[in-house]
Image 1 (cartoon, rainbow, N blue to C red):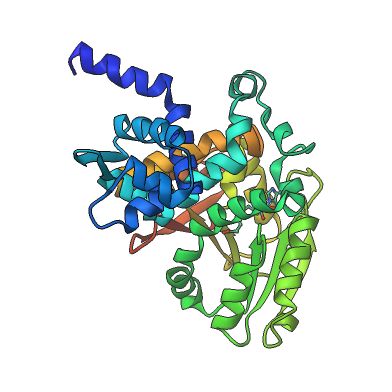
Image 2 (cartoon, helix red, strand yellow):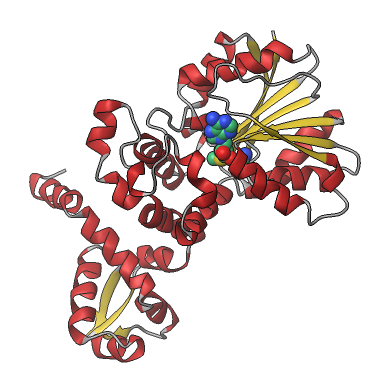
Length: 349
Ligand SMILES: C[S@@+](CC[C@H](N)C(=O)[O-])C[C@H]1O[C@@H](n2cnc3c(N)ncnc32)[C@H](O)[C@@H]1O
């Protein structure tokens, strides 16, 4: 890269919060939507009329959006979305990531240096007074909760259909869903098979939400039970008796040492025939750079907001911990159709 271009790239980084807030504001004020719905773009005057925003407001936002390649000037005085602008206006992954960044992470990211220096989620205080974000999830303000759950669900829901096929190939009768959250997997699996029973293990706030969701569905509510557990408590246990131990997007909430400790808790009571399934979006298993970028950025959410010590892992790192804890990986399932996920199927050595 020529120095003049590198200097330009460096300015994009120096001013990156300005670009982000411009994109967010243009979504919220309906400017990107108005441009998306226009035939051949709009003049600044037309944008101002359609959105009831001052000429000044439209001008500063459009000028920033133009130098950031969100909009392009098409003819004298007309502006339209670029391809990048189109994705910001309409792509679901981009919307979910952007709202998560704004509502959950933006203020907290200010404390990243402190989080790195101290190994604590120093930005979490911007949301509430908890040790980890999971303790506060169920009581977050509504718009922040919405952004968190949309982000969480976006990266797991679309993989459940393929996951069900893999998990039910051995006809399990009892599944332990560790980190079962709002009960989405418990609902999906008990609907998938009319006899399977699911035990959800999670923190109390999440169990309450899961129970409220599941109690509304008569055909499944008697087949789900709820187990309050803090997996970080050294005295907590995972009992035996499950055919399948299911952990979806769960182990990335913990440091490498904590993951090993959790696997050892499972190992203590699991039988030789039990299968443990770990579903994750691994950094090294992504076919698209947009996905890799999103996951690497998500690691910093764990650093500064969630818990201060976990991250999105590579499958290589996870398999190393699995081996160290005394399990062997019998199969690695790649769910790349419309999904970013890998399921590691493991059993006791
Ligand atoms: C990222 S969510 C994943 C939810 C769900 N399995 C999915 O695939 O969407 C992580 C879940 O782990 C739970 N969790 C985090 N720390 C925990 C802990 N120390 N003990 C028990 N559950 C915990 C959270 O409450 C949350 O429900």
